[in-house]
Length: 135
Image (cartoon, rainbow, N blue to C red; front, side, top):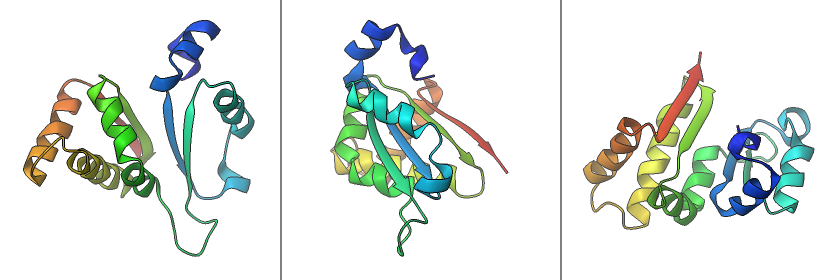
């Protein structure tokens, strides 16, 4: 989907709009297309944030990275960006949704938890936050 955003020139011109938060268990075993992501990042086509949950003693998940980069996430939302989530249905959708709410709150997009939930619900209604999950 990232490559589908346009031809090479259009893709480079949209660099500030292409942010990938990628969470997998380990860099060595699960970081599929690593060289492709690295090439796109090096060319300025993509901002890449990774979370490798099993590569250190304390687990780091994608929801942690979303909160750490709340400003970027909120900026993308404000500019009309889309959030696509893909992952296991057990915990990931709820955890990422909570992280999005936290990012909205942290950056002044909502005064209360309820307001932040409404922002995320609006993104879903507008099809700007879409989830594909499996069990």
